[in-house]
Image 1 (cartoon, rainbow, N blue to C red):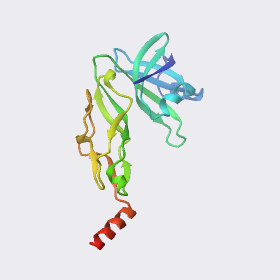
Image 2 (tube, rainbow, N blue to C red):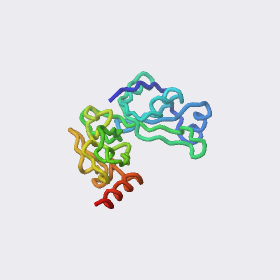
Image 3 (cartoon, one colour):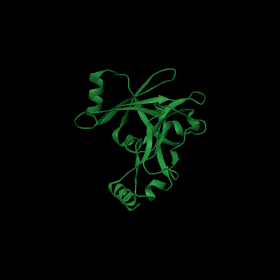
Length: 193
């Protein structure tokens, strides 16, 4: 996984009123939990833009008042109307403690069903995995070359080294769907026989 550097300023005032004042100054209240103590701090909108608005995943080296914490992005809260970022939660990570994180799925290969006129559809963009953070890949690659027309790949059919998939086993990751043109070609072929 890639590493993202982030620096924040510690905060002592907690609660709604203090958080509102922080947001009024164009900063974002944030917290790191999962370690010995909970760390409350603020970051700027610009500092976290490339961390949040990307499909990639990162480990984050958060520096607050001279002390550095290794963490992952755990939760984001947005304003329901303006979509402005209101709060960020980070989870501190350790070498020997497994983490649960959503990893992007990338499809590889040309599916057999696509050659027959079907349309490949990615149903789950990210899979939830549990592993030590050093074993978490940047992306999960799924080979779809053998996927036929009208067939699917489910989470239960996938295995990755040193990773435990947390999604439901029958959840569909990708499918080759029958298009109208493929149905017409299939019906025409059946009519000629």
